[in-house]
Length: 75
Image (cartoon, rainbow, N blue to C red; front, side, top):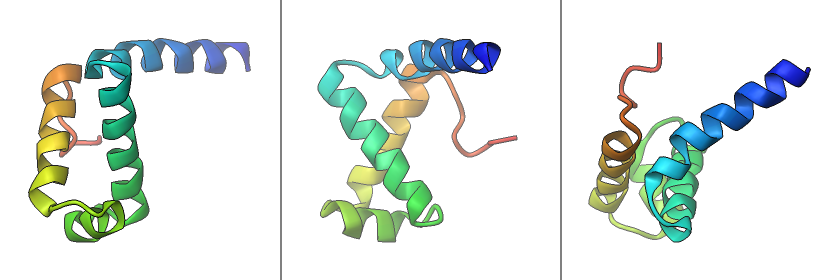
């Protein structure tokens, strides 16, 4: 249990803090959360967030670039 918590803290520090300012972190995390809730459908996520589909795509690209991950490959 302690190891799980520590690993979670390390991943959070590594991924979330690399996303930018606190406001940018919140915006990107909300976008990702909404996208997962919408079964990875960008159009549905955009509608739920009241933004254009390209805005969702832009936030995803920003997350990938800043965190150094590829969100298209979750394996």
